[in-house]
Length: 30
Image (cartoon, rainbow, N blue to C red):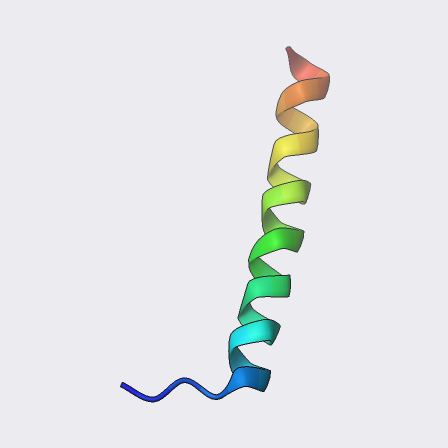
């Protein structure tokens, strides 16, 4: 399995963005 650094950072940033977008509404509700 080969992972290119640009792809890795792209998916990492995407994952962080999704984590923030999902976490913020949960904290606001609670």
